[in-house]
Image (cartoon, rainbow, N blue to C red; front, side, top):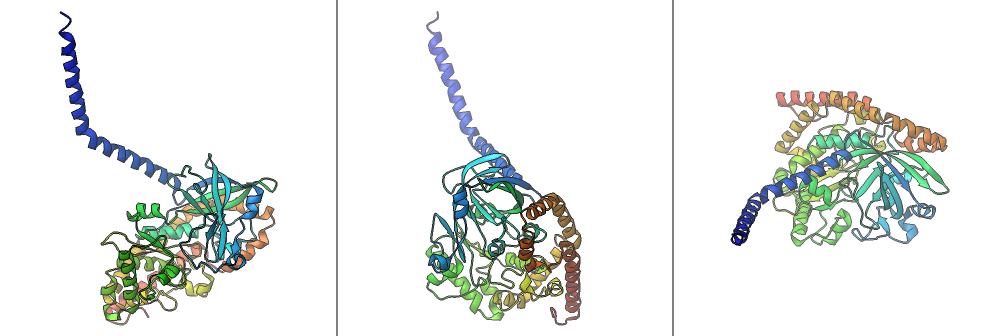
Amino acid sequence: MSAPLIPSTFRAWRRFGWICWLLGLWLSPFLADAAENATDAASKSATEEIFGLTNIHHFHLQIAAQDYAAMEAIPYQQAGMAPNTLPGKKDADRHLGEAFLFPWVRASLVANGSAYPTVGVRYKGQFTYKASRPLLKRSLKIDLQHFENGRKFGPLKKITLNAGVLDPNKCREALAYAAFREAGVPVPRTAFAEVTLTVPGKYDREYLGLFTLVEDYDKGFLDTHLHDAKGVLMKPAGGRGTDYLGENWQPYKRRYNPNRELTAAETKFFIDYTRAASQSETDEYRQNIDAYLDLDKFLRYVAVSAMIVNLDGPLAMPQNFFMYVPSQPGKKIIFMPWDLDLAFAAWPLGGAVAQQLNWNLLHPQSGENLLIERLLADPVARERYLTILKELADTSLSEQALLKQIDAVESAIKKSVAKEAQAVAARQETELTFKAGRITSSAPTLHEFATQRCASIRAQLSKLSVSAASGGETGK
């Protein structure tokens, strides 16, 4: 009686297995979506823990004495090299900056209690590096995977820590990035970090101070913010992003510093852009440039730069910006700001404080900038620009919004800034810090900027509205 039960049981289990397989096949897309959503949620959670306008992290670096001594930047002339003549050239031991070679050294890092036994660390910056050279606190780049594969800090493989040596408030950079971000310009996210340093025999958990942690412009940034990790990032040096240099690509590599080699199609697209940007006639400028440049984002970039008086960039200087060149058809070039610690009327070459606080919204460029000049001469582009100015003046860059944000950030970092001042005094660096900060000693406080600049913006926009209504000339 028991023999027939065996095949019957087997058949039942086999039917059950087929049912499970079919059920799994049917459910697999839903399970995959659930797993992907869980991964995205975990990644978003980790990112939110890292970035935030008032987030403060705690980092401890330990560097061997010989490595700490080897970190000092080397001027190109001292190294027998021409400054940055080969952009894109790789050097595993040194970062090739615009004026210096920055050696990488080994260090260990403890970030918010988590240990990273072997990381790469170097100094960074150009003008700010020179200003901070006599000080212990200098801007740093930490590469968690420079010497060996390792973990990330949240979503980050690299950590950029800006010292803000020229910013008396220590928060201009974070506030400026927030202004661009809220206006719809893709920019790095930020946080703050208290950093201590141990160099055996020299420093024992010495408090360096409060740094601004800034997200890097890299493939991760492109993927997160522009959904195009294959796009090209350029950091132009010595131009304002419109220079047509002929049909040979090599001069463009030296001027625009792409982060990778461009394809033939990308090369043609970019050269065609520079030709349109620099050679088109005024009456057809917008139509020609619209095929290559994301006009709305560019006008937003210019509007925010003008409103927060960020003059250490293309408005006044041929530096401190990135360009995104898309890899996907249909996407367009985007300008993005960098190095914003001198925003809010703190650029010493921008003129007197009163002049900067009343910076002209309709002629925001200092010197020649054909891209801005010709776009704002075009009625359609000019009207869109004015709309953006009014929108921002009523929302994220209104006096009330700015003061609220300034108060929140200054309150969050108050203790850290006071602690840094005590450490500077204990190291007898007070006079050196004063000399470094003397460059921006006449800069307005952030509260002064918010009240006086916003009043100027309202007055300018009101005058423009009256002029437009009467049919008169605007922007004078």
